[in-house]
Image 1 (cartoon, rainbow, N blue to C red):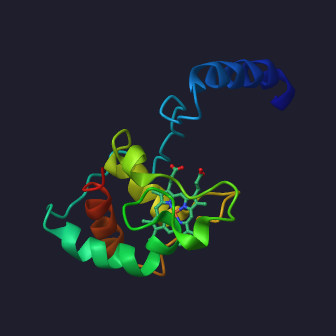
Image 2 (cartoon, protein in one colour; image 1 turned 135 degrees about the horizontal axis):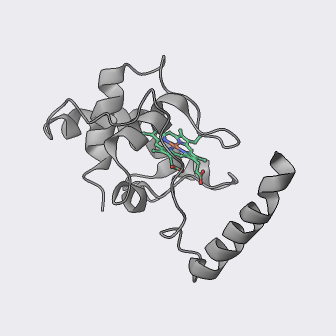
Length: 133
Ligand code: HEC
């Protein structure tokens, strides 16, 4: 099963490498959102961005940086480095952002925030991330 998929994997990595041009990640497709989260949209209005800014400052800024560029002091030594959320939010749906924040990202320092933050706080953070550019 895994072996059979290898050529496709290698091929897609080559394609990604070819499109990568100068280290931009804009061409790397995002992972599909699991069914549990797929299709969710932020139930809070854009007003939630100001509450989200506080959530972000306390919990996320150390790694992702004040503008979300992935340049926070605690992120410097991490591999992979914290994501540039300004770049990411331009091409990711609410469901993707909520899922990643709630569940974390395996194999990286991005932990699951569900349990630490309420769902409302996660949506506030998403509203704030939407203001990043
Ligand atoms: C300990 C450092 C650290 C903290 C704190 C942190 N992150 Fe992350 N974050 C990361 C790393 C590392 C990644 C993975 C980047 C990658 O895969 O390229 C990541 C990934 C993400 C992603 C998904 C990017 C993708 O690859 O799709 C989102 C969204 C995100 N973080 C938002 C947040 C939010 C919101 C908070 C605060 C609630 C937060 N992060 C706190 C380090 C951190």
